[in-house]
Image 1 (spheres, rainbow, N blue to C red):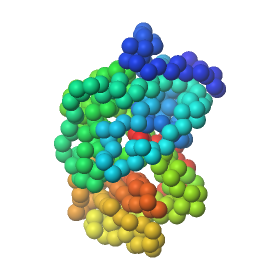
Image 2 (image 1 turned 180 degrees about the vertical axis):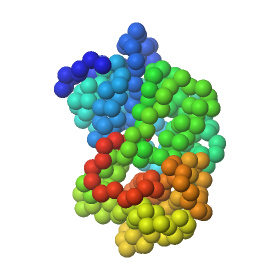
Image 3 (image 1 turned 135 degrees about the vertical axis):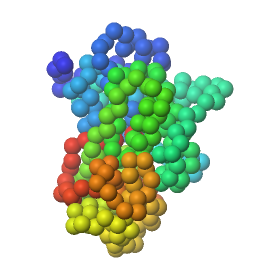
Length: 300
């Protein structure tokens, strides 16, 4: 791939027609879908995409379909100038920023439902969320027509849903997931972290410590899922600010495990509210890693 200058001015387009014109005849295309308020997790996805693609597209669209009626659509953080600085530093070629009417014109009445992997965990806690995610991502894939699309593993269930959708619907795209990017405390980077003060963010790292405790129990020989979960619950229970939604050990099908085998896709996932903010995280069941910034990340 050609080298990219340290700072470029990406082409910003807002309509499908302008997007297709910008991408006409431009080689291997990579897509990083986002909802904006970009952080180093997003930038890591962009840098990886830049390495393997001729043209890099980043979409910025706060998707109303994936927010429930009591969720934070109106308050979701937005900072366009900051976002354009991040994409410029990452060498992005095209930024696609459609408005809601472009993505969901009058009389829009189609939804994408991915059964099975979407039904538990966040699918149960946030009804309709993954329908909104699958619908908008399929639209973006149809509009951009990328060869490769990049997502972070922080949203592990979302990644499973999108991989299933791409397989089932024969979408001609390679889906690449990259490891979660973490703050030095271990807290998974997320746009919603901006709702927390620095002190609260430090407290919220208890989620990653709980996951690490599960990893350590697994590395120590524990294979009963209840025992693994208890190792994480012991950590979470020490902080009274944690209101737990779930702490689950799941396989590649996103189903709860009773006993953990040697499936490399087995993960421990957590969702909890702290200081009024819902946070999620996950880790693979491998020997525990240090709580340090890790390369990689996964929408929005």
